[in-house]
Image (cartoon, rainbow, N blue to C red; front, side, top):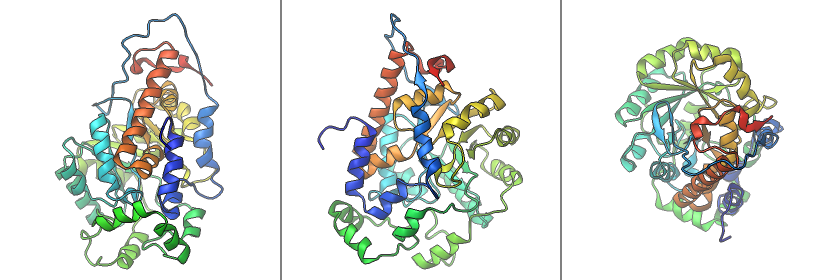
Amino acid sequence: MTVITHIEDLRVLAQKRVPRMFYDYVDSGSWTEGTYRANTADFDRIKLRQRVAVNIEQRSTRTTMVGIDVAMPVAIAPTGMTGMQRADGEILAAKAAEKFGIPFTLSTMSICSIEDIAAATRRPFWFQLYVMRDRDFMARLIDRAKAARCSALVLTLDLQIIGQRHKDLRNGLSVPPKLSLRNLADMVSKPRWCLGMLATKRRNFGNVFGHVKGIETMRSLAEWTNKQFDPRLSWADIEWIRKRWGGKLILKGIQDAEDAQLAVASGADALIVSNHGGRQLDGAPSSISALPAIAEAVGHKIELHMDGGIRSGQDVLKARALGAKGVYIGRSMLYGLGAMGEAGVTRALQIIHRELDLTMAFCGHTDVEKIDAEVVRV
């Protein structure tokens, strides 16, 4: 494949180059995968309003997200185990995002550590945090994010327990991975991936390994991780985190208008309308279908973001029209990373940016900040 024209091209290439257990980890949802599919399908149902004979010169996709200048209203979403799609994957994605001028968000469950990203980049990045039982570890994570110049903390609220993901169970994706003959044969058939993994020292959860007493092997890491996601999470925990962090706070995982109003009351700077990419509650509404009601409920009281199903610049424009100040891309970035490394992430960003720019033009708009509901037909 010599010509990459849209995100689907990157997905096809990633499927060929990434071992099945890690590719399926990205390209799947929970249970029947109904919500996972709806995240993209519901974007397709939204139609655009084309305008003509309008001056569309001097177009700009520049805006801000939580007060930070961005080249387009897009940030890289926090994705777990990114470094298993391509060796040092988080570093490669962070570099691509920095060069393009959009935020990169590092997951708590990343392969590369907070310190790795800080050493590889110059501009501040964002860090995503889970609420865990080990509050001392959480406090240290927050302090490490501060020391690494992170400019926003993204707190994920919808992973108190893990949704049942059938493909991961069938593939033996666990910590450590179950290396069946089928899995080993599949890895060997991906020599580029294998060579990259052999060349890097980063193969564990970099934010955890070496930072928790008693974790010395992958087995002990697995035992610790399985006990850590905290089902007792409450808004009081969010208040503690907000005070400990002291900077920009973004709440991720909001799907309900009542929860959105509680997010406003919490003092957070932004919320992300998200269903965890369809990987948690199957049967939940798509993010884009949940967005309008949440936008109506909170108005301008809090900055509104969304993720889930963004595969094109047109999707970005539709989300903006329905109330989102910015969006996050996870799978679109991961497809690019798995396909071509840093160059693939850059290509994904270029594709989305060009599609956004062209769609703005066809809809008679020159400023992404002025996109509103008049642009779409729902």
